[in-house]
Length: 98
Image (tube, rainbow, N blue to C red; front, side, top):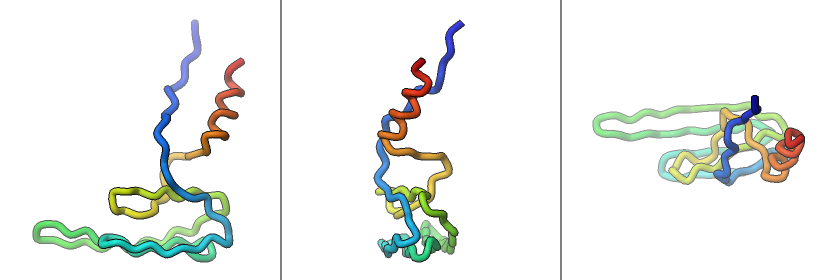
């Protein structure tokens, strides 16, 4: 019997790994975001035919958390799944090679 793992994704995602000193502001037509002192605030407005929704989100981050930048207009998001750098992925895959 052989052992199998899920095929690793080679999709790349632009983003940042935050530290206690990371600060930024990002704004477009749908979102207004700020990060300071590891507190990430995001106000997202979605408009559709006959409706408008506004979401006000505050996330308390930890040093080392990753925020991914989504090109589709959502700005920065904290992904649900764990992401690592390419170097970290190669290192981890090397451990299971044997």
